[in-house]
Length: 146
Ligand SMILES: CC(C)(COP(=O)(O)OP(=O)(O)OC[C@H]1O[C@@H](n2cnc3c(N)ncnc32)[C@H](O)[C@@H]1OP(=O)(O)O)[C@@H](O)C(=O)NCCC(=O)NCCS
Image (cartoon, rainbow, N blue to C red):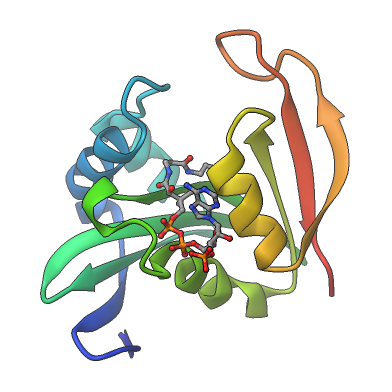
């Protein structure tokens, strides 16, 4: 467990964390594509998958889920509960995984909050995947600058 600002704690969770991750994800992605407990349980058993949860005063506030294959790490999802947003937690979660090396992710072209966060963390646009999401919208591929 890593300690950050007073009251903030970071903890890695294994497959037992699937119900919590599903609840946090559903709250953060209101109206979006929902990943259920079974999806998280399955993702967390994949080799190289890692979930990092941030709590504020012992209340789970958000998480980042990554998967590392050889020297590349993908941010599979990132979520901060609405009441904890704009406090710097998303940035801290991303910064916590940056030491893994080369990082990439897909983000919806319409997700201004996430795109701004990744740009602020030093990511750059590397490509576009057309019709990537269930609703037919496009995804921007972003990579970390090493
Ligand atoms: C995207 C998300 C994770 C950001 O989390 P957060 O904890 O609020 O982000 P931070 O407070 O660390 O913000 C860091 C920077 O990102 C940018 N940012 C974050 N939210 C933003 C918003 N709503 N509008 C514009 N810029 C935003 C800003 O540059 C911000 O720095 P500032 O607060 O000093 O201006 C959060 O909004 C979320 O969970 N959204 C729903 C799920 C989602 O879209 N996940 C990403 C999938 S790829």
